[in-house]
Image (tube, rainbow, N blue to C red; front, side, top):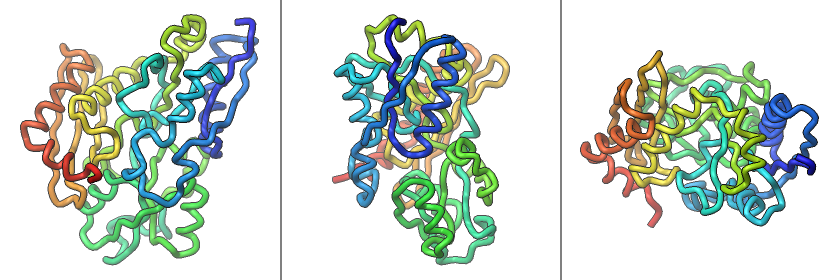
Length: 306
Protein backbone atom coordinates (compact mmCIF):
# COMPACT_ATOMS: atom_id res chain seq x y z
CA UNK A 1 0.00 0.00 0.00
CA UNK A 2 1.60 3.25 -1.13
CA UNK A 3 -0.66 5.64 0.76
CA UNK A 4 -1.18 6.15 4.48
CA UNK A 5 -3.83 3.98 6.18
CA UNK A 6 -6.32 6.15 8.07
CA UNK A 7 -8.23 4.66 11.01
CA UNK A 8 -11.39 6.34 12.28
CA UNK A 9 -12.48 6.16 15.92
CA UNK A 10 -14.20 8.10 18.65
CA UNK A 11 -12.02 10.47 20.62
CA UNK A 12 -12.42 9.17 24.17
CA UNK A 13 -9.39 7.89 26.06
CA UNK A 14 -10.72 4.33 25.83
CA UNK A 15 -11.52 4.59 22.11
CA UNK A 16 -8.01 5.86 21.34
CA UNK A 17 -6.42 3.06 23.36
CA UNK A 18 -8.56 0.58 21.42
CA UNK A 19 -7.54 2.12 18.09
CA UNK A 20 -3.86 2.04 19.08
CA UNK A 21 -4.17 -1.67 19.90
CA UNK A 22 -5.52 -2.28 16.39
CA UNK A 23 -2.68 -0.20 14.92
CA UNK A 24 -0.23 -2.53 16.68
CA UNK A 25 -1.96 -5.62 15.26
CA UNK A 26 -1.98 -4.24 11.72
CA UNK A 27 1.67 -3.16 11.88
CA UNK A 28 2.71 -6.61 13.05
CA UNK A 29 1.09 -8.07 9.97
CA UNK A 30 2.26 -5.22 7.70
CA UNK A 31 5.68 -3.94 8.82
CA UNK A 32 6.50 -0.44 7.60
CA UNK A 33 2.90 0.58 6.90
CA UNK A 34 2.18 4.21 7.82
CA UNK A 35 -1.01 4.57 9.89
CA UNK A 36 -2.86 7.66 11.12
CA UNK A 37 -5.70 7.77 13.66
CA UNK A 38 -8.51 10.22 12.92
CA UNK A 39 -10.88 11.18 15.75
CA UNK A 40 -14.57 11.52 14.89
CA UNK A 41 -17.30 12.92 17.14
CA UNK A 42 -20.49 10.82 17.16
CA UNK A 43 -24.07 11.60 18.16
CA UNK A 44 -23.56 9.56 21.33
CA UNK A 45 -20.61 11.79 22.25
CA UNK A 46 -22.61 14.98 21.67
CA UNK A 47 -25.72 13.85 23.55
CA UNK A 48 -24.67 13.07 27.12
CA UNK A 49 -28.08 13.45 28.74
CA UNK A 50 -30.67 11.23 27.01
CA UNK A 51 -30.79 7.48 27.77
CA UNK A 52 -29.11 5.42 25.06
CA UNK A 53 -32.24 3.43 24.31
CA UNK A 54 -33.97 6.68 23.28
CA UNK A 55 -31.38 8.06 20.86
CA UNK A 56 -30.89 5.11 18.50
CA UNK A 57 -28.87 1.94 18.08
CA UNK A 58 -26.00 3.42 16.06
CA UNK A 59 -25.28 6.55 18.12
CA UNK A 60 -21.58 5.72 18.63
CA UNK A 61 -20.76 4.66 15.08
CA UNK A 62 -22.90 6.39 12.42
CA UNK A 63 -20.60 9.36 11.82
CA UNK A 64 -17.61 7.01 11.67
CA UNK A 65 -19.39 4.80 9.11
CA UNK A 66 -20.26 7.92 7.10
CA UNK A 67 -16.56 8.78 7.00
CA UNK A 68 -15.84 5.26 5.73
CA UNK A 69 -18.44 5.51 2.99
CA UNK A 70 -17.21 8.86 1.70
CA UNK A 71 -13.55 7.84 1.80
CA UNK A 72 -12.27 10.11 4.59
CA UNK A 73 -11.00 7.04 6.47
CA UNK A 74 -9.94 3.55 5.36
CA UNK A 75 -11.07 1.48 8.34
CA UNK A 76 -13.10 2.06 11.49
CA UNK A 77 -12.52 0.62 14.95
CA UNK A 78 -15.59 0.10 17.14
CA UNK A 79 -16.47 -1.65 20.37
CA UNK A 80 -18.39 -4.51 18.77
CA UNK A 81 -21.22 -4.29 21.31
CA UNK A 82 -22.02 -0.83 19.86
CA UNK A 83 -22.41 -2.16 16.30
CA UNK A 84 -25.97 -3.05 15.22
CA UNK A 85 -26.48 -6.31 13.33
CA UNK A 86 -27.51 -4.34 10.22
CA UNK A 87 -24.37 -2.99 8.56
CA UNK A 88 -24.88 -0.15 6.02
CA UNK A 89 -24.73 -1.16 2.36
CA UNK A 90 -21.17 -0.95 1.09
CA UNK A 91 -19.54 -1.77 4.44
CA UNK A 92 -18.55 -4.96 6.25
CA UNK A 93 -16.75 -6.11 9.36
CA UNK A 94 -13.40 -7.46 8.20
CA UNK A 95 -11.98 -8.67 11.49
CA UNK A 96 -12.40 -8.79 15.26
CA UNK A 97 -9.76 -8.72 17.95
CA UNK A 98 -9.25 -11.41 20.55
CA UNK A 99 -11.95 -11.07 23.16
CA UNK A 100 -11.00 -9.84 26.61
CA UNK A 101 -12.98 -10.84 29.69
CA UNK A 102 -16.63 -10.42 28.56
CA UNK A 103 -18.03 -9.99 32.09
CA UNK A 104 -19.64 -6.95 33.67
CA UNK A 105 -18.01 -5.53 36.80
CA UNK A 106 -19.10 -3.52 39.81
CA UNK A 107 -17.11 -0.51 40.97
CA UNK A 108 -18.10 0.71 44.43
CA UNK A 109 -16.59 1.71 47.78
CA UNK A 110 -15.23 -1.85 48.07
CA UNK A 111 -18.61 -3.39 48.95
CA UNK A 112 -19.76 -6.26 46.78
CA UNK A 113 -23.22 -6.27 45.22
CA UNK A 114 -24.66 -8.51 47.95
CA UNK A 115 -23.17 -6.24 50.64
CA UNK A 116 -24.83 -3.01 49.46
CA UNK A 117 -27.92 -2.02 51.47
CA UNK A 118 -31.37 -1.67 49.96
CA UNK A 119 -31.82 1.72 48.33
CA UNK A 120 -28.23 1.89 47.08
CA UNK A 121 -27.95 3.75 43.76
CA UNK A 122 -26.22 1.80 40.97
CA UNK A 123 -25.33 3.76 37.85
CA UNK A 124 -25.81 2.17 34.44
CA UNK A 125 -26.88 3.33 30.99
CA UNK A 126 -27.88 -0.18 29.91
CA UNK A 127 -31.37 -1.69 29.93
CA UNK A 128 -29.74 -5.13 29.99
CA UNK A 129 -27.79 -4.36 33.16
CA UNK A 130 -30.80 -2.65 34.74
CA UNK A 131 -32.99 -5.69 34.14
CA UNK A 132 -30.37 -8.17 35.35
CA UNK A 133 -29.65 -6.07 38.43
CA UNK A 134 -33.35 -6.14 39.34
CA UNK A 135 -33.44 -9.89 38.88
CA UNK A 136 -30.30 -10.38 40.95
CA UNK A 137 -30.79 -8.02 43.91
CA UNK A 138 -34.15 -6.60 44.94
CA UNK A 139 -33.99 -3.18 46.57
CA UNK A 140 -31.05 -1.75 44.61
CA UNK A 141 -31.88 1.28 42.47
CA UNK A 142 -30.62 1.29 38.88
CA UNK A 143 -30.05 4.95 38.00
CA UNK A 144 -29.25 6.35 34.54
CA UNK A 145 -25.69 7.51 34.03
CA UNK A 146 -23.88 8.86 30.96
CA UNK A 147 -20.37 10.09 30.26
CA UNK A 148 -16.99 8.46 29.80
CA UNK A 149 -15.51 6.08 32.34
CA UNK A 150 -13.49 8.80 34.10
CA UNK A 151 -16.70 10.81 34.64
CA UNK A 152 -18.57 7.81 36.00
CA UNK A 153 -15.77 6.91 38.40
CA UNK A 154 -15.72 10.47 39.73
CA UNK A 155 -19.46 10.26 40.42
CA UNK A 156 -18.89 7.16 42.56
CA UNK A 157 -16.01 8.83 44.40
CA UNK A 158 -18.19 11.91 45.03
CA UNK A 159 -20.98 9.79 46.49
CA UNK A 160 -23.51 10.50 43.73
CA UNK A 161 -23.73 6.74 43.18
CA UNK A 162 -23.02 3.84 45.50
CA UNK A 163 -21.66 1.86 42.57
CA UNK A 164 -21.57 1.60 38.80
CA UNK A 165 -21.62 -1.37 36.44
CA UNK A 166 -19.22 -1.38 33.50
CA UNK A 167 -17.66 -3.85 31.08
CA UNK A 168 -14.58 -5.55 32.49
CA UNK A 169 -12.82 -5.20 29.13
CA UNK A 170 -12.99 -1.39 29.30
CA UNK A 171 -11.23 -1.31 32.67
CA UNK A 172 -8.66 -3.87 31.49
CA UNK A 173 -7.81 -1.82 28.39
CA UNK A 174 -7.40 1.30 30.51
CA UNK A 175 -5.15 -0.59 32.95
CA UNK A 176 -7.59 0.06 35.78
CA UNK A 177 -8.29 -3.49 36.95
CA UNK A 178 -7.40 -2.37 40.49
CA UNK A 179 -10.53 -0.20 40.52
CA UNK A 180 -12.81 -3.24 40.06
CA UNK A 181 -14.67 -4.25 43.21
CA UNK A 182 -16.30 -7.39 41.82
CA UNK A 183 -16.54 -9.35 38.59
CA UNK A 184 -20.26 -10.05 38.29
CA UNK A 185 -21.11 -13.72 37.68
CA UNK A 186 -22.14 -14.70 34.16
CA UNK A 187 -25.01 -16.78 35.49
CA UNK A 188 -26.62 -13.53 36.70
CA UNK A 189 -25.15 -10.95 34.31
CA UNK A 190 -24.83 -12.18 30.75
CA UNK A 191 -22.94 -9.64 28.61
CA UNK A 192 -24.07 -7.80 25.51
CA UNK A 193 -23.38 -9.46 22.17
CA UNK A 194 -19.76 -8.83 21.24
CA UNK A 195 -18.79 -7.39 24.62
CA UNK A 196 -15.06 -7.51 25.15
CA UNK A 197 -13.98 -7.43 21.52
CA UNK A 198 -13.27 -4.77 18.89
CA UNK A 199 -14.62 -4.70 15.35
CA UNK A 200 -12.59 -3.53 12.36
CA UNK A 201 -14.94 -2.25 9.65
CA UNK A 202 -14.12 -1.29 6.07
CA UNK A 203 -15.65 -0.76 2.64
CA UNK A 204 -17.09 -3.90 1.09
CA UNK A 205 -15.21 -3.62 -2.21
CA UNK A 206 -11.78 -2.51 -0.96
CA UNK A 207 -9.64 -5.60 -1.58
CA UNK A 208 -6.38 -3.82 -0.71
CA UNK A 209 -7.64 -2.95 2.77
CA UNK A 210 -9.05 -6.46 3.23
CA UNK A 211 -5.63 -7.96 2.47
CA UNK A 212 -4.03 -5.68 5.04
CA UNK A 213 -6.57 -6.21 7.82
CA UNK A 214 -7.67 -9.84 7.43
CA UNK A 215 -4.54 -11.33 9.11
CA UNK A 216 -5.53 -9.57 12.34
CA UNK A 217 -8.81 -11.48 12.66
CA UNK A 218 -8.99 -13.70 15.76
CA UNK A 219 -10.82 -16.80 14.54
CA UNK A 220 -12.10 -18.22 17.87
CA UNK A 221 -13.59 -14.81 18.75
CA UNK A 222 -15.00 -14.49 15.21
CA UNK A 223 -16.88 -17.78 15.63
CA UNK A 224 -18.33 -16.72 18.97
CA UNK A 225 -19.48 -13.28 17.85
CA UNK A 226 -20.92 -14.74 14.62
CA UNK A 227 -23.23 -16.89 16.74
CA UNK A 228 -24.10 -13.99 19.04
CA UNK A 229 -24.92 -11.56 16.22
CA UNK A 230 -26.91 -14.18 14.31
CA UNK A 231 -28.93 -14.67 17.50
CA UNK A 232 -29.64 -10.92 17.74
CA UNK A 233 -30.50 -10.63 14.08
CA UNK A 234 -32.97 -13.51 14.25
CA UNK A 235 -34.67 -11.88 17.25
CA UNK A 236 -34.97 -8.66 15.26
CA UNK A 237 -34.27 -6.77 18.47
CA UNK A 238 -31.68 -4.13 17.69
CA UNK A 239 -29.00 -3.82 20.37
CA UNK A 240 -30.73 -1.78 23.11
CA UNK A 241 -33.33 -4.28 24.37
CA UNK A 242 -32.55 -6.12 27.66
CA UNK A 243 -30.72 -9.01 26.01
CA UNK A 244 -27.56 -10.84 27.01
CA UNK A 245 -25.76 -13.49 24.99
CA UNK A 246 -22.40 -15.22 25.14
CA UNK A 247 -20.88 -17.72 22.74
CA UNK A 248 -18.10 -20.05 23.86
CA UNK A 249 -16.07 -22.80 22.25
CA UNK A 250 -15.13 -25.95 24.14
CA UNK A 251 -12.88 -28.06 21.93
CA UNK A 252 -15.08 -28.68 18.87
CA UNK A 253 -18.37 -27.81 20.58
CA UNK A 254 -20.03 -24.40 20.32
CA UNK A 255 -22.15 -23.29 23.26
CA UNK A 256 -24.42 -20.27 23.27
CA UNK A 257 -26.18 -18.94 26.37
CA UNK A 258 -28.71 -16.10 26.21
CA UNK A 259 -31.40 -14.26 28.11
CA UNK A 260 -34.17 -11.83 27.24
CA UNK A 261 -35.76 -9.83 30.07
CA UNK A 262 -38.58 -7.39 30.60
CA UNK A 263 -37.30 -3.83 31.19
CA UNK A 264 -38.08 -4.09 34.92
CA UNK A 265 -36.30 -7.45 35.21
CA UNK A 266 -39.33 -9.16 36.71
CA UNK A 267 -39.65 -11.59 33.83
CA UNK A 268 -36.66 -13.32 32.27
CA UNK A 269 -36.43 -15.95 29.55
CA UNK A 270 -33.13 -17.81 29.50
CA UNK A 271 -31.94 -20.70 27.35
CA UNK A 272 -28.81 -22.24 25.87
CA UNK A 273 -27.84 -24.50 23.00
CA UNK A 274 -24.69 -26.38 22.12
CA UNK A 275 -23.70 -28.44 19.12
CA UNK A 276 -20.54 -29.56 17.39
CA UNK A 277 -22.17 -29.95 13.96
CA UNK A 278 -23.94 -26.64 13.45
CA UNK A 279 -22.18 -23.53 12.17
CA UNK A 280 -22.03 -20.59 14.64
CA UNK A 281 -24.66 -18.75 12.59
CA UNK A 282 -27.03 -21.72 12.65
CA UNK A 283 -26.50 -22.05 16.40
CA UNK A 284 -27.45 -18.40 16.95
CA UNK A 285 -30.60 -18.76 14.85
CA UNK A 286 -31.63 -21.93 16.70
CA UNK A 287 -31.26 -20.28 20.11
CA UNK A 288 -33.23 -17.21 19.00
CA UNK A 289 -36.05 -19.41 17.75
CA UNK A 290 -36.01 -21.31 21.04
CA UNK A 291 -36.40 -18.10 23.06
CA UNK A 292 -39.06 -16.73 20.72
CA UNK A 293 -41.05 -19.91 21.27
CA UNK A 294 -40.75 -19.20 25.01
CA UNK A 295 -42.31 -15.74 24.58
CA UNK A 296 -39.21 -13.55 24.27
CA UNK A 297 -40.80 -11.44 21.51
CA UNK A 298 -43.29 -10.02 24.04
CA UNK A 299 -40.47 -8.88 26.31
CA UNK A 300 -38.57 -7.29 23.41
CA UNK A 301 -41.64 -5.28 22.38
CA UNK A 302 -41.99 -3.96 25.94
CA UNK A 303 -38.48 -2.47 25.70
CA UNK A 304 -38.96 -0.67 22.38
CA UNK A 305 -39.53 3.09 22.61
CA UNK A 306 -43.06 4.25 21.76
